[in-house]
Image (cartoon, rainbow, N blue to C red):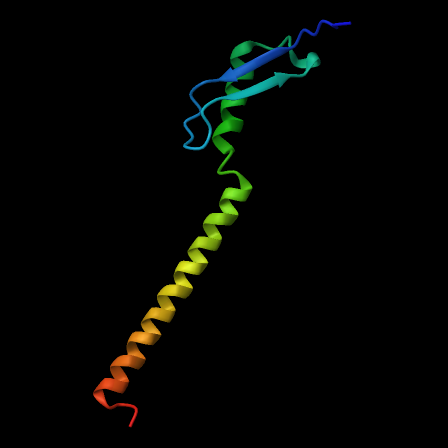
Length: 90
């Protein structure tokens, strides 16, 4: 048996986000009588607030930490090599 469902959906095409192409919002039945313009503005506001997916943000932070550690290791190694070649270490 197939049950009919009637839902009001707001589709945001232009999300102005590098992560999301489209967003869909299912409007609660008690708010479906509100003006469509108001619902669309609220949907755009929510999409605008949404940043990168949380897992993606964690990956970016980890990459930055590893890059900083790598750079620090390189600098320390370069200083030690230069010090040993120039005779600073004895």
